[in-house]
Image (cartoon, rainbow, N blue to C red; front, side, top):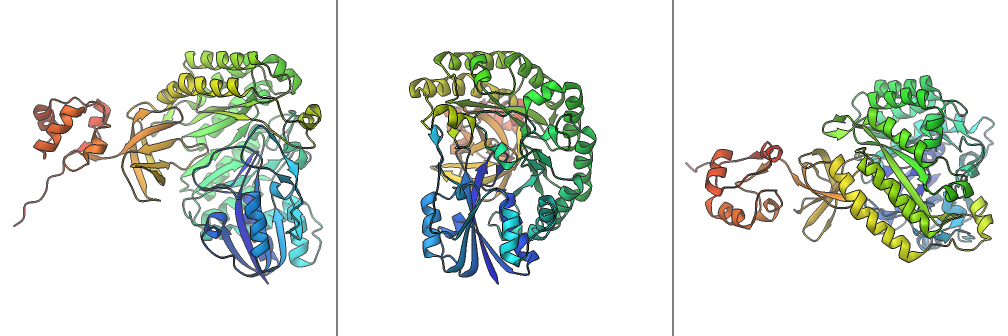
Length: 548
């Protein structure tokens, strides 16, 4: 039997699958099909947009965005595309899995998700899809636990990575667990819909890492869990389990290039500060640089915190980020090892105009303190049925003052993000292995592999998917400008050289007229230019060979 797996990409809390990320969904589905002895063909939605849908006995379509965002590496499948795919596909059985199987949403915030019908699909499922797919593929009922099933499926399905168009430049999400460890939950969150908090055994994760590594994967993120510090713990942290996890990953994947994590609950961190501090030390010891702990603060307004059962207040959060900075701000290859990320959410119960001012004030205090924050995520809430927020709103749209919201984002991008980027990635910082992902005008845009990688704009057209090392020369609000290194001042285009600090219009004219140069001393004497010392270290002067 032939199974066609169509990856429409997912963006769910604690679960990301937009390229260069690969979620667990297609790997698990492929593994379940292999367990039943079936043939598997895998393609992404970006591939299907430019080709025909292959014939199959069973088509499994994966999709769903429950967290609003902007994407660079790929565009998630829309509900309209999902419907069209089902209409034109020649498959005996059409299955839709992921959050799209339950909710109709788009990629905007400030909306209400509605339950969908999707009559074009024979079967639709989200939570618990693994057990149901196993029964469809084999005709038998899996009698064990879910983690026992995905242990086998994840290992068998690892080989599917080779069919992804981005391979080997893939960041594979690793499931550590599901659900939320809190007894009462944030008003808007869908994670409790997955059931009680549970952690996947360390040995199961390690077996999957080995299978992925043997298949050529070198980039991993410990995700699919709402709070990594509750892994194998819940009420109290389990630092031994976390250390075993990180050590074992390094043992079975000795030449990995990226090992990052995702979500952390700052309230849980504060409540168990001494133990969590040891766990942060473990992460910093075994991870790769550029790692981020994404923290759902949501709001610093006491009224909003209380009304939505949020995790932490401002004073306690500052203590948490100070602790993470004290251990994770040290640099490896020029980049901090581990920094906090902040999520702010608007449209919550009790929100008022004062909320924006409170959040701005706290963030500026953090900036003025000298601490570092890698990423500030500002978004509108997406309201889902079965959540306390949906019930509190009575099914109505969340109230968001668009003027205040837009002005708030403008202020923070200009007064907070820009200066924080300069602190985290100062001029002269080298970013290795930046992968070119898109072009716009005469600019190439790329990112390193990582949990929340910074976007690098390079004023030069470079081939897509190529890897370059860059030096940071300027800062925007959410991205930085870099130039490929080393820089050959004798041959590089003037369009790129003009971005180097110390090279003005007059210097550009001299460079064009008087090239080539023999050395930096020769360059300075003939142009009068003074480059930053760090940039000087990345400059060379190639000489053309004379023809015999």
